[in-house]
Amino acid sequence: MKKFLDDNFLLDTDTASELYHNYAKPLPIIDFHSHLDPLAIAANRQFSNLTEAWLEGDHYKWRAMRACGVPEKYITGNADDREKFRAWAGVVPYVVRNPLYHWTHMELKLYFGIDDLLGPGNCDKVYDKCGAMLSDPAYSVHGLLKKMNVEVLCTTDDPLDDLSAHKKIAGNDFSVKVLPAWRPDRALEIEKADTFNSFIDKLEDISGLRILSAGNLIDALDMRHAYFHESGCRLADHGIREFYADSYSANEIEAIFSKSRERKGITGEELNKFKSFLMYELALMNNRRGWVQQYHYGVIRNNNTRLYNALGPDTGFDSIGCYNVAEAMSRFFDRLDSSGNLAKTIIYNINPSGNEMVASMAGSFNDGSVAGKMQFGAAWWFMDSKRGIERQLNTLSDIGLISRFVGMLTDSRSFLSYPRHEYFRRILCNLFGSEIEKGELPADKEHIGKIIQDICYFNAKEYFGF
Image (cartoon, rainbow, N blue to C red; front, side, top):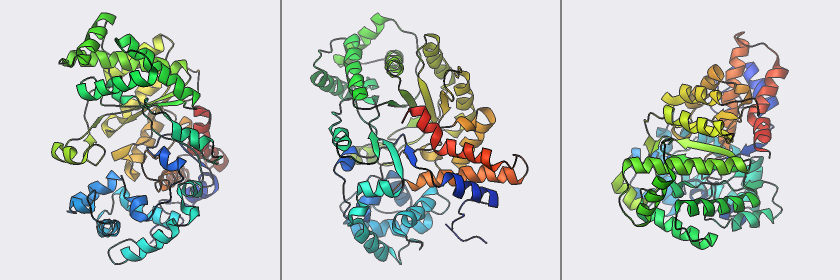
């Protein structure tokens, strides 16, 4: 019987172990999609304790705590940090077979050298030991990133952001390259009159343009897009419920925009037309400046209205959606491709029932201009588990080319989340190693090892131009 979390954790064969330790493990990390706070990086934040570093903003853990009957006081409420950590430690033994169980113990081991299983009996000891280590400058935000061998990370930034934090980071001679990524979701939320109009008003102030029409809106957004480009941004990320590719006329779009600015009701048909218009225009910007565009789609957000109203967004009340998006996705990418405006693109689906559709759709728009131009993105959010990662990798292998895959990202708000890259690399090497030992792949470890290295690092480095 193997020991939990030993050197060959998740590696079932000698070949898998060799692939991981010799080829995957030594490589730096390129984290091309995260939700890390650039202000914390710019300030080189020093966390006061493990609750601040580990539980603050982590809605994965919050969901698990609620499922175990922990009162909100100890999750997002006013309990002190030690009490919150004790509550989390009491939950950990009951998250077995959830990826949180693996991540929790990998993070304790890789950052703090703690091999013990976390639980109520040792929570104070762990809290105090980690707290003492976190007070060391080597465990500041910069130290934590360097400890995990992070080479590049991209944050997620609103078009209205002045990117001052990124400018400060760039001037600090920090060894990790930290770049912004454009996330214009609020510009599409025309159905939310207050949110949309507040965004437009602020965009007017920042851009210096009067936004009296949809055309003015595109001009102002393009100015911000150019500003992001000048600040080093080369990625866009779009969090969308569905893909939109309805037909529309310029007059229809202007009329819809005017109705929204006047806070008049928007019909479902008008909503889809406007989103189709704006998604297309944003994609044109991405292509014009040579960016990579990412599409995260399919989530139903804020299901629990009562708790959303009390706690706000991104607090653990989202779920997998079920939408029939294939035809709209096809029309959207085909329109861009037909006009020569399809940028390098990564598609992330949250519902595993869409795996085969997304993998086959992405393959339909590769055109020989760039290796792996269209990517079926890594297992995301609720799918970011051992089985979810394996499903994504196997689907990509069956329908596309895993050898051209740009690999893993954290999609995290926690600076302690980088062991997820190791998690992915171990699972990847185990798949290849197992098939080599079964005779399903040739025992050419040099060639397979190079493919492993490409997936873990070199493909992303080339694809994004880092």
